[in-house]
Image 1 (cartoon, each protein chain N blue to C red):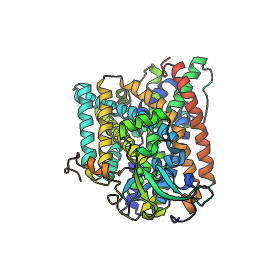
Image 2: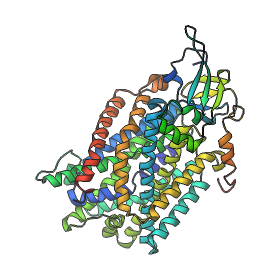
Image 3: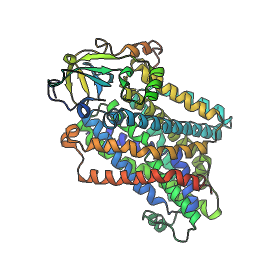
Image 4: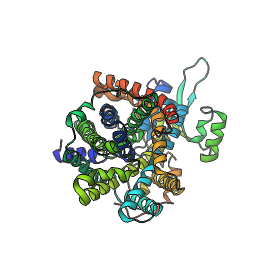
Length: 117
Length: 411
């Protein structure tokens, strides 16, 4: 499926894993941003990734807890950065270029490098 | 297909099939009900073959493991509930396995149990750090083949084979009191849970991705899940049958893993005992690693993190932190000195409650032509899948009442 094709939002896009152009996992489609207005064609403008996008999708108490644990950051991925949508959303760029690996990169600093085959 | 790869895959599945819960419940089931619960192992093995094959096929074709697609299918809310429940049940299972490792090391060395549990967890963690996925899977799976000593022991004690074979026929033994009937039901549910543990699907499908399976690997997947799981299940059945033959007549209740090891000591003496203990050690240690990794897979896949042990630990840092955290948490549970057998029972009961939520999305995916194309479920896979989904749902509903009514099979 191409990103310009008609999309059934919930069935085809929401909660799909995202991979960058190198095949690395870099998030989940937590929400989508739509463009357009009443009476006009709606389009998916961007994918929203990060715990901040859970607001509205979870009960208030649950979102409060998620926010305390994971924060409320949201990364916005323009649809022009999406290559194709299958069982994963594949990006045209790397995770770092899309700013999706900030936490992963920070965590990398905590892990000793060595001793593994 | 590479015959060596296929043989190794099957042998790994055999050696990795049995864990502490199967050891404990098989031996107890044999000592209490004779051969009458063999059929539950046999039938549920068809269930794990069905779901194992499906999860491997989904991994090979859609290139996505179970938890990645579970959230997409169940949605965020129900997905989070499933994640939470499966993480808790698998964490308890990891703790039970680490406790089991500690117990077997204690039998082998005489050193204090809790110290041995801590040493065991440290060694397991080191092996997960050092070895890549394929080596982890193969090392524990192949060394676990020492468990074949139980199959040899069964042959050596000359059991009444007609009665053993009769156990494969679904049955409720006649003449049971109401209390015994409830206990029989509890053991049937516990064996169902032990054979169909949810972590097995997570680990197996994630393993398929780790090893970069594609459609060309589907015959290998089918052989591993049918032949490998069937032979592995026969080991558990052998433990049950030996217990029925040796322990039942003298009213011995093998409630700790050490009793199961005696099953090999009786026909083969010291060498048999050593082989059984070492086989159990590796099998339980392998299950500890699998459960720990399964939890890290689940969390990483649910939140879309980098994951996998085909990468170096620092290349998938949050995944690495997750499995280390789960190993430490499981060890802390054991260090509270909670009874290992209680942990096994909690793991069994929690796991069966999660099972329907694990297998429903898998069924939905494997029968979805959009994902699976020509490799979509056929009639047999659909029929068996829904049948076992119904069975695990009934077992999930019955598990907690049966646990309470029978005081965990003790009443």
